[in-house]
Length: 118
Length: 112
Image (cartoon, rainbow over the protein chains, first blue to last red):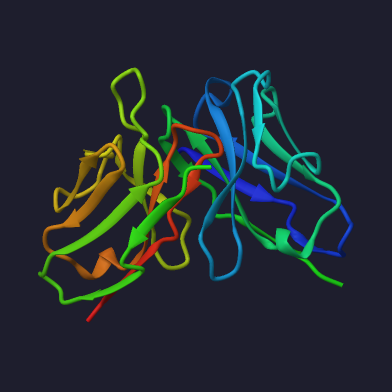
Protein backbone atom coordinates (compact mmCIF):
# COMPACT_ATOMS: atom_id res chain seq x y z
CA UNK A 1 0.00 0.00 0.00
CA UNK A 2 1.26 3.42 -0.94
CA UNK A 3 1.46 5.49 2.22
CA UNK A 4 2.80 8.77 3.54
CA UNK A 5 2.98 9.42 7.26
CA UNK A 6 3.90 12.81 8.64
CA UNK A 7 5.31 13.39 12.10
CA UNK A 8 7.03 16.08 14.13
CA UNK A 9 4.22 18.56 14.61
CA UNK A 10 3.49 20.20 17.91
CA UNK A 11 3.34 23.44 19.87
CA UNK A 12 6.22 25.87 19.46
CA UNK A 13 6.75 29.46 20.52
CA UNK A 14 7.08 32.26 17.99
CA UNK A 15 10.63 32.40 16.74
CA UNK A 16 11.17 28.74 17.48
CA UNK A 17 12.00 25.81 15.23
CA UNK A 18 10.40 22.51 14.35
CA UNK A 19 11.33 19.67 12.04
CA UNK A 20 8.70 17.66 10.20
CA UNK A 21 9.20 14.25 8.65
CA UNK A 22 7.21 12.35 6.08
CA UNK A 23 7.86 8.62 5.92
CA UNK A 24 7.03 7.03 2.59
CA UNK A 25 6.26 3.39 1.97
CA UNK A 26 4.84 1.16 -0.74
CA UNK A 27 6.53 2.89 -3.68
CA UNK A 28 9.93 3.83 -5.07
CA UNK A 29 10.35 7.08 -3.16
CA UNK A 30 13.39 8.23 -5.11
CA UNK A 31 11.40 8.27 -8.37
CA UNK A 32 9.05 11.07 -7.37
CA UNK A 33 8.99 14.75 -6.66
CA UNK A 34 7.60 15.44 -3.21
CA UNK A 35 5.57 18.35 -1.88
CA UNK A 36 4.59 20.07 1.34
CA UNK A 37 1.19 21.77 1.46
CA UNK A 38 -0.32 23.40 4.53
CA UNK A 39 -3.80 24.26 5.70
CA UNK A 40 -4.40 26.82 8.41
CA UNK A 41 -7.41 26.18 10.68
CA UNK A 42 -10.69 26.51 8.83
CA UNK A 43 -8.98 27.82 5.72
CA UNK A 44 -7.82 26.54 2.36
CA UNK A 45 -4.78 24.80 1.00
CA UNK A 46 -1.48 26.58 0.45
CA UNK A 47 1.54 25.15 -1.32
CA UNK A 48 4.70 25.43 0.77
CA UNK A 49 7.57 23.71 -1.01
CA UNK A 50 8.63 20.96 -3.38
CA UNK A 51 11.76 18.95 -4.07
CA UNK A 52 12.90 16.98 -7.08
CA UNK A 53 13.71 13.29 -7.12
CA UNK A 54 17.38 13.74 -6.32
CA UNK A 55 17.00 16.92 -4.30
CA UNK A 56 18.75 19.07 -6.87
CA UNK A 57 15.72 21.29 -7.55
CA UNK A 58 13.87 22.96 -4.70
CA UNK A 59 11.16 25.61 -4.70
CA UNK A 60 9.48 27.53 -1.90
CA UNK A 61 6.51 29.77 -1.45
CA UNK A 62 7.61 33.35 -0.76
CA UNK A 63 6.00 33.21 2.68
CA UNK A 64 8.47 30.57 3.89
CA UNK A 65 11.54 31.30 1.78
CA UNK A 66 14.61 31.78 3.93
CA UNK A 67 12.93 30.22 6.98
CA UNK A 68 11.94 26.71 5.84
CA UNK A 69 14.20 24.08 4.31
CA UNK A 70 12.93 21.05 2.44
CA UNK A 71 15.13 17.99 2.05
CA UNK A 72 14.91 14.28 1.47
CA UNK A 73 16.81 11.12 2.26
CA UNK A 74 16.11 8.61 -0.47
CA UNK A 75 17.93 5.86 1.41
CA UNK A 76 15.49 6.32 4.30
CA UNK A 77 12.44 7.01 2.11
CA UNK A 78 11.82 10.17 4.08
CA UNK A 79 10.96 13.78 3.26
CA UNK A 80 11.74 16.58 5.70
CA UNK A 81 10.73 20.15 6.37
CA UNK A 82 12.93 22.16 8.72
CA UNK A 83 11.00 25.19 9.93
CA UNK A 84 12.84 28.06 11.62
CA UNK A 85 11.79 31.50 12.82
CA UNK A 86 8.24 30.30 13.13
CA UNK A 87 5.40 32.79 13.20
CA UNK A 88 1.81 32.58 14.36
CA UNK A 89 0.71 32.54 10.73
CA UNK A 90 2.62 29.30 10.19
CA UNK A 91 0.06 27.53 12.37
CA UNK A 92 -1.46 24.85 10.15
CA UNK A 93 -1.78 21.20 9.34
CA UNK A 94 1.17 20.29 7.16
CA UNK A 95 0.62 17.63 4.51
CA UNK A 96 3.22 15.87 2.42
CA UNK A 97 2.22 14.58 -0.99
CA UNK A 98 3.76 12.61 -3.82
CA UNK A 99 3.66 13.98 -7.34
CA UNK A 100 2.74 11.10 -9.64
CA UNK A 101 3.00 13.21 -12.75
CA UNK A 102 3.09 16.97 -13.25
CA UNK A 103 0.36 18.26 -10.94
CA UNK A 104 -0.98 14.86 -9.90
CA UNK A 105 -0.56 15.00 -6.13
CA UNK A 106 -1.40 11.54 -4.88
CA UNK A 107 -1.43 10.35 -2.24
CA UNK A 108 -1.37 12.85 0.59
CA UNK A 109 -0.44 12.02 4.13
CA UNK A 110 -2.88 12.53 6.98
CA UNK A 111 -1.06 15.69 8.03
CA UNK A 112 0.68 16.91 11.17
CA UNK A 113 -0.47 19.93 13.14
CA UNK A 114 1.95 22.74 13.87
CA UNK A 115 0.83 25.35 16.36
CA UNK A 116 2.89 28.49 16.86
CA UNK A 117 1.83 30.26 20.00
CA UNK A 118 3.22 31.68 23.20
CA UNK B 1 1.08 34.88 -8.65
CA UNK B 2 -1.85 33.29 -10.45
CA UNK B 3 -5.04 33.85 -8.51
CA UNK B 4 -7.62 31.08 -8.65
CA UNK B 5 -11.16 32.24 -7.98
CA UNK B 6 -13.88 29.71 -7.25
CA UNK B 7 -17.62 30.27 -7.24
CA UNK B 8 -19.74 29.60 -5.36
CA UNK B 9 -17.92 29.25 -2.06
CA UNK B 10 -20.62 26.98 -0.78
CA UNK B 11 -23.57 25.09 -2.15
CA UNK B 12 -26.22 22.84 -0.77
CA UNK B 13 -27.55 20.15 -3.07
CA UNK B 14 -30.31 17.57 -2.85
CA UNK B 15 -29.09 14.03 -3.48
CA UNK B 16 -29.57 13.10 -7.11
CA UNK B 17 -29.40 16.68 -8.30
CA UNK B 18 -26.50 18.16 -10.28
CA UNK B 19 -23.87 20.53 -8.96
CA UNK B 20 -21.44 22.84 -10.70
CA UNK B 21 -18.37 24.73 -9.47
CA UNK B 22 -16.56 27.39 -11.42
CA UNK B 23 -12.87 28.18 -11.24
CA UNK B 24 -11.27 31.14 -12.98
CA UNK B 25 -7.54 31.72 -13.19
CA UNK B 26 -6.01 35.18 -13.47
CA UNK B 27 -3.71 33.93 -16.23
CA UNK B 28 -3.85 31.12 -18.73
CA UNK B 29 -2.66 27.77 -17.43
CA UNK B 30 -2.13 26.36 -20.91
CA UNK B 31 1.41 25.11 -21.39
CA UNK B 32 3.33 25.13 -24.65
CA UNK B 33 3.16 21.33 -24.57
CA UNK B 34 -0.57 21.65 -25.24
CA UNK B 35 -1.66 20.54 -21.80
CA UNK B 36 -3.59 22.72 -19.39
CA UNK B 37 -2.37 22.27 -15.85
CA UNK B 38 -5.65 22.70 -14.03
CA UNK B 39 -6.67 20.18 -11.42
CA UNK B 40 -9.55 19.50 -9.05
CA UNK B 41 -9.15 18.09 -5.56
CA UNK B 42 -11.74 17.07 -2.99
CA UNK B 43 -11.13 17.22 0.73
CA UNK B 44 -13.69 15.13 2.56
CA UNK B 45 -14.34 15.90 6.22
CA UNK B 46 -11.42 14.88 8.40
CA UNK B 47 -9.37 13.66 5.46
CA UNK B 48 -6.50 14.95 3.36
CA UNK B 49 -7.26 16.16 -0.16
CA UNK B 50 -7.63 13.63 -2.94
CA UNK B 51 -7.14 14.11 -6.66
CA UNK B 52 -10.35 14.07 -8.69
CA UNK B 53 -9.59 15.58 -12.10
CA UNK B 54 -6.29 16.22 -13.82
CA UNK B 55 -5.51 18.44 -16.80
CA UNK B 56 -9.01 19.95 -16.86
CA UNK B 57 -11.11 16.98 -17.82
CA UNK B 58 -9.49 13.64 -16.99
CA UNK B 59 -10.86 11.63 -14.11
CA UNK B 60 -8.22 10.20 -11.81
CA UNK B 61 -8.18 6.49 -11.05
CA UNK B 62 -11.26 5.38 -9.15
CA UNK B 63 -13.17 8.65 -9.53
CA UNK B 64 -16.83 8.01 -10.38
CA UNK B 65 -18.14 8.95 -13.81
CA UNK B 66 -20.57 11.44 -12.30
CA UNK B 67 -17.62 13.80 -11.91
CA UNK B 68 -16.57 15.74 -15.00
CA UNK B 69 -14.32 18.67 -15.71
CA UNK B 70 -14.32 21.11 -18.57
CA UNK B 71 -12.98 24.45 -19.66
CA UNK B 72 -10.00 26.08 -21.30
CA UNK B 73 -7.66 28.99 -20.95
CA UNK B 74 -8.76 30.67 -17.76
CA UNK B 75 -12.30 29.36 -17.18
CA UNK B 76 -12.97 25.92 -15.79
CA UNK B 77 -15.90 23.98 -14.39
CA UNK B 78 -16.33 20.90 -12.25
CA UNK B 79 -19.68 19.20 -12.55
CA UNK B 80 -21.30 16.43 -10.58
CA UNK B 81 -24.13 14.95 -12.59
CA UNK B 82 -26.01 13.49 -9.62
CA UNK B 83 -24.75 14.35 -6.17
CA UNK B 84 -24.44 11.58 -3.63
CA UNK B 85 -24.02 11.82 0.14
CA UNK B 86 -20.36 10.76 -0.11
CA UNK B 87 -19.57 13.82 -2.24
CA UNK B 88 -19.69 16.21 0.73
CA UNK B 89 -16.53 18.13 1.39
CA UNK B 90 -14.53 21.04 0.04
CA UNK B 91 -13.56 21.15 -3.62
CA UNK B 92 -10.41 22.97 -4.68
CA UNK B 93 -9.11 23.86 -8.09
CA UNK B 94 -5.35 24.06 -8.49
CA UNK B 95 -3.09 25.52 -11.14
CA UNK B 96 0.22 23.77 -11.47
CA UNK B 97 1.73 25.63 -14.40
CA UNK B 98 3.38 28.58 -12.72
CA UNK B 99 5.17 28.89 -9.43
CA UNK B 100 3.89 29.44 -6.88
CA UNK B 101 1.41 26.64 -7.31
CA UNK B 102 -1.94 28.09 -6.25
CA UNK B 103 -5.26 26.72 -5.08
CA UNK B 104 -8.71 28.24 -5.27
CA UNK B 105 -10.37 29.23 -2.00
CA UNK B 106 -12.42 26.06 -1.95
CA UNK B 107 -16.12 25.35 -2.44
CA UNK B 108 -17.94 23.59 0.36
CA UNK B 109 -20.57 21.11 -0.82
CA UNK B 110 -23.27 20.11 1.60
CA UNK B 111 -26.20 17.78 1.19
CA UNK B 112 -29.68 19.18 1.78
